[in-house]
Image 1 (cartoon, protein in one colour):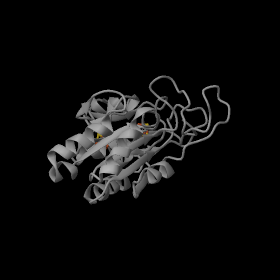
Image 2 (cartoon, protein in one colour; image 1 turned 135 degrees about the vertical axis):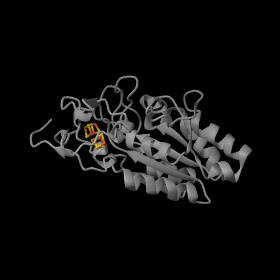
Image 3 (cartoon, protein in one colour; image 1 turned 45 degrees about the horizontal axis):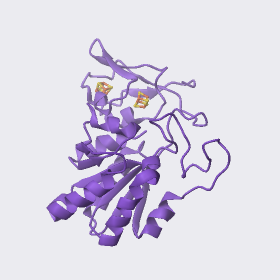
Image 4 (cartoon, helix red, strand yellow; image 1 turned 60 degrees about the vertical axis):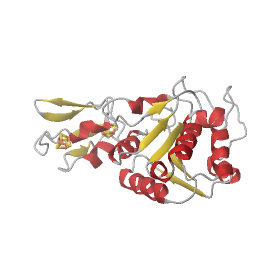
Length: 238
Ligand code: SF4
Ligand code: SF4
């Protein structure tokens, strides 16, 4: 669900310290929104090191991105280091409410154990506050203008901060999708701006954008990319 956030990071030309998970695909074209990925859990510590070494110039244009599961597994110690040493670093936790890359295993934030039984759930906002991060913001990556604005605001702050990009994985059974979009062929001018989001449902045919309704989850991110208002919602469930 984090394509919109990666598009914003790419647009803002932010240096992104990446991590291991489904979101590592944000490094690939067309998003190209990840500059380094060292090993699992290393994104936050790497950002801390880069910012310590490079100073204020780096702090204002660098973030770490890490999934909710990886953050719980081996990322939070890096955030403790950032809070303890008070570096002006911005960490983005990509919370898709599951462990995506390895096949939808539960994790300590989901409220279920690996058997699917009820378990204690870690509240990411409370955990970040307890670690010592005062500025903790939550965004919905499907809302790109808000996401971009919050990234800019947190990068500008003179303190450690965390942005939680929260939207459950579209493949989770309980997630309800809005009806699919279709592209009005009369409105589309073929500018290809919508392709920059990297959605597998969108392709170009005869110079116009087309949506494969069997793949579309109705997230509206492409609609926010189009200056010609060419995307419209279908009436029936996709
Ligand atoms: S952004 Fe809009 S006008 Fe441009 S190709 Fe996509 S649908 Fe067509
Ligand atoms: S085509 Fe569907 S899934 Fe893809 S960005 Fe647009 S609304 Fe989202």
